[in-house]
Image 1: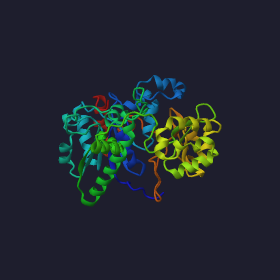
Image 2 (image 1 turned 60 degrees about the horizontal axis):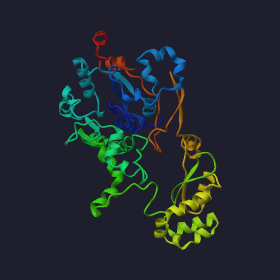
Image 3 (image 1 turned 90 degrees about the vertical axis):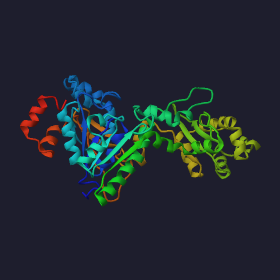
Image 4 (image 1 turned 120 degrees about the vertical axis):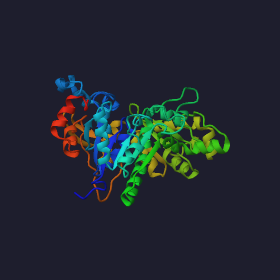
Amino acid sequence: MAKRPFEGLKVLDFTWGGVGPFQSNFLTYYGAMVVRIESFSRPDVTRQGGGFNPRAAEHAEEFRDPRKRLEFGAAFAVTHPVKKYGISLNLNHPEGVNIFKRLATWADVLVESFTTGTLEKRGLGYEDLHKINPRLIMHRTAGYGHTGPMASQPGFGQTVTSLTGFYTITGWPDRLSVPISSFYTDHLSPLFGGMALITAIDYQQRTGKGQCIDQAQIESGINYLSPLVLDYAANRRELALKGNKCSYAAPHGPYRCQGEDRWVAITVQTDGEWEGFCRVVGNPEWTRDSRFGTLEGRVAHSDELDEHVNRWTADFTAEQVMTMLQAAGVAAGVVATAQDSEEDAQLKAYDFFRELEHPYLGKQKFFHPPGFTLSDATAEIHRPVFLGEHTEYICTEVLGIPAADFKRMEKDGVFD
């Protein structure tokens, strides 16, 4: 196997939830040795949420063990399909803090995602760690960053997604807004954070110098709403809830097709696309209505236009509509279900869903690693690390702690 870009890089992953792990995963996929720091006394929230795998019934004895039960969580499995080393540390114990510092001296990179003050009050802030390892890169990702009036507020995906403004544009004009059914900014922020982290690593390798990266997830999210921010800045115009309506496209939205709850999304922007659309639907009389002759007219009368389109799409499958319209140069796509995605020929060609064996969950399909491929390096995936799985190895082999001292600290609760 060709050498991967981050081989030899040593990383501490002291994150939880989605954003932080996703960012460290970029490095793990491509060769970095990543040590994930957790605690049995306060496990990662994703180990406890997202539902338990149904195969838990086959491992009733392990499932009754409160520690082993943490390995059955579906959410953690999805967010950690990478080869990480796991250590459990009790940072409320002085020797736990000391081991953290020793790891920070060993590491090239530390990624953390806790609220402002969490590390500082234990003497583990950037200024403290910089003194013992000047070349350390400390990437800090939090809902609102580590400065400003909201720095002390905990940040969760749903809250940050709301504050960025996404919920003001998802919904219908006659109803309350509809929250996006995901921790949306958890999936946006890692793209910015990952780029910043890789840039800092490049700088470190060229200069030997570390730095602190302070990422506010709310800023990353707002970048995806730039047109709306600019519209308000220039025109003092707020975008109102309008469902799937669009000011520069009609037809625009999902349309019902044959089958149970099957839909196709269609977008027609230009007059040329409208002409192609009309040819596909057979140029019926309604397509020659003068109100639909211009984009402005189609947008103004989009409700009536949508009724016509829905009557046409109802006679075909979503796949048929998509194929016909795409052949005519019109944007169209099946509104895919999870089953559609799993059976998608394109995703199969990219080996997007990969099957791995898990000691408790059996064979599980995991998402394609980073969402891209490199021509000269293959991303490595692995079953999720168990909490504290490599605590003894990291302490005795990586840090050189004598076995007798390790056993003593284990009895003293340093690794709880």
